[in-house]
Length: 485
Image (tube, rainbow, N blue to C red):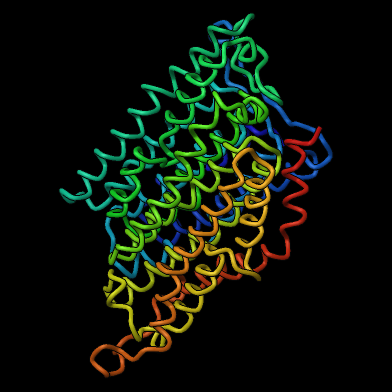
């Protein structure tokens, strides 16, 4: 299938969702139909890409060397599969959450969700930096109404932080880097090249390092410190939006762009050069540990999960920064494994809120007896984020650990191990206290599970994290095509 047509599916779906806005059941049916059609379309690309083909669509040249280009390669297809697959349980969850919590502006909510997935497909299938930048910015625009959904002063403040940081970094740094690549190339081009754009190799090491910094720091969606504040601020949004931000779209768009830039703009051997990527190794390692320590101190459940995401995203950035094939493979695997595990945790957080109104970790003691399915799903998601078998997260952390040992910075393995211990400290006590400690007042809770749609969605993604442990081999082999000789 033409990658342009795949990108158009959620765009057309958003129009149909708006058209059906006066009939909630039909609107939600259209959401499910669109999400199912998108997954089928993305899956239809898998045989061709697995066979070594690269489906491509090229638009007319707008300026010398600048045109919209879609091209499907393994890394982008993997990201598209993650987003398209998780949109289905997220849609199931959203219906139960939005109705159970009596949220307003539901038509706008579901339409913006579809537009976000259209932007994600554009990012995943971008064949050059120009196309990538267009859809990267579009994703920020269409998710802004989701972040500010409640319309409260707190939501509007979060929205200002959200667009301020994301547009500030992208327009001030990312765009500058793209323009520099275009100007330095002869003839002018911003097309992705496997192994890196040749013109950049002629630059001095200092200029290579500066240009690399413009790209990495300009991709604010990767939430590297100190450009991470938008992510905790955005937790004021409804839980399905938090799940979208953390697992399906925005943050994964950020780390995907970092991986893409390392492989197709600079080349992993150039990233491994001390003058280019060493600073990123230290920044990613620092973000991993500091964000984990901050998460440990958060009593608000969504805030704890938000800082956990900041830390986990830097695992992927670290995989790119070490500059070897194992790091890219481990980072790509972590995109998948973290997405499935973290969306489970946010689904559970929202289910707890819908059923009980509780938002703080200190309020969850003893709740596992009344909400066993929700907390069982939370436990499985936790084990995957920690990286314990038999959950999918074990494999991505394994490959990232091997990548550190093959790099010039083997001490990074200690960073990953310390962070995993901190993961245990800020996540595992939640389900343990929920199941094995009595309620603080000694009385049984007067509530039960959240609406079935919330519980089913959390169960599906939790079981997905378990299934990924046994599917990691084919995923690794597929992604390895990006960095194989």
